[in-house]
Length: 355
Ligand code: NQM
Image (tube, rainbow, N blue to C red):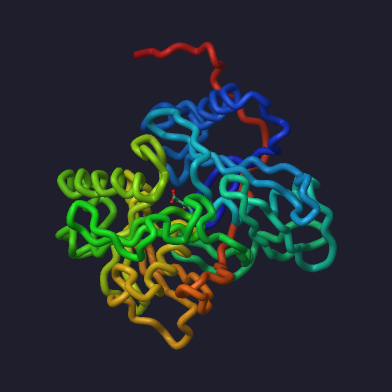
């Protein structure tokens, strides 16, 4: 099934219907998407990291959750298939997909599906409306970056702090100097490096295309990322899609902070879900890089993040811990839609390279 999940789009499969062998499975998924090829012309991928995604969903053996969800990022240009990150946007469609495929039993006017995000071994609950046992996709909820409205999907996260790196602040500090630039390296569901846009000589509200065209800036950002990956205990991140890089500046459009995020080589048209939760957390920590640029609203737990196509509201609850703030629950609102359900015809594994 092809679904839009939040501001991303991907192919959702019942995990057991794909080959067990990970190499065979990954080769198949790359061919399904049409990778490697910058246009993904021979597959169903959309020629951008945000539309070259896969969700594998299976019934869970853990009685505390309903389904397991493994996210796989398929590299557009290189055909790599990577499980080193989560995706909170595709997560927005996992509950509905599980209902459509009969993986969970539901009844009544709404479903609450508990989902284990296998990439980080953390749990999210997706709540969405039902009609006669099937998901309702139509609705009047708007999210920035999607031109049409749809039914609300609420996602509530548990224990996301340090889910990939082992600690909320994997370097042990709230701020580090990397290549002479101050950064907060954080993992509240997505390993992310938060930097002040001005420290890198940019305004911070440039278009994704303008930022991607700035070669010097991108090289500098990548050097910082490679170093941050080591400091965040992720090792050599030259071929992985984490950490993400978020540049922050003062808000311009009525939000609380302005962002531009690299995921990590393309500039996001919006911001990722767990990426947004991680950025909001960094900005609320005393000493977090860019915290002084945050112009909070009445409820300090709600951070309205400006991005290239609008704003994203992340709810992050912090509490006082023995050695400083500890992260409580977090949550966000998304929408998702079933776009297509059918049979995909990947090119065969033996099909040659024409160049
Ligand atoms: O951060 C893109 C997206 C994402 C990830 C990325 C996401 C998240 O927008 O949870 O949703 O950062 O590669 O789908």
